[in-house]
Image (cartoon, rainbow, N blue to C red; front, top):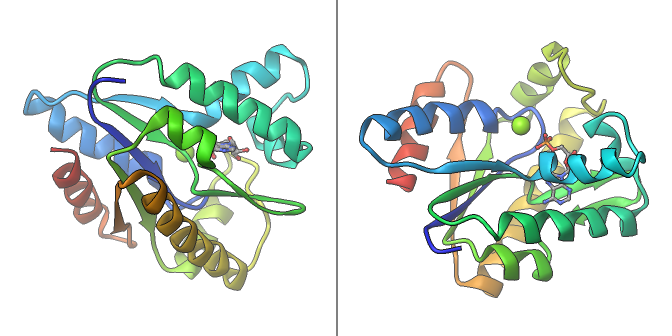
Length: 190
Ligand code: AMP
Ligand code: MG
């Protein structure tokens, strides 16, 4: 990996993909190019070929060792990319047996991020966004539990910065303020 490597994380439903898409549109007009790599898609491609899942939302319920194997494969594939990459993923994945690190040491060693961005907002807003998203099988959880997940992500991101020397940036994607989040993201990627 020779260009810049930026990892974008956030709990399901926070609007990561929407913010990333907006920021990349702005940068494109300025001649700054990033290739977006979706970590879940890399994992899903392998899992689907192996016939172990039919839907990407089933992966977080697989045995943790299987998830880690898929995770490692995905990281190795993504590391082959040259140029600037933006990796859309999760700081941690909520599994039935607890939080699974999204970027354990062997993944970070492949991806060596310059920056990890945490897209966040109020847990009540996330809860509502999940309830109205019909394209995905979102977990049913209360706002307390969503808040806990966001807190855990901040904690584990601190560990990731210790391991790699990367910077950590929090971006708020609040209701009605998508443009602000998009601008904040573009500023980091510039
Ligand atoms: P997404 O489309 O970003 O919600 O990702 C779909 C699924 O991919 C997640 O629910 C996880 O099961 C899996 N996934 C994505 N990134 C990671 C990661 N870094 N480590 C482990 N699993 C991941
Ligand atoms: Mg997404």
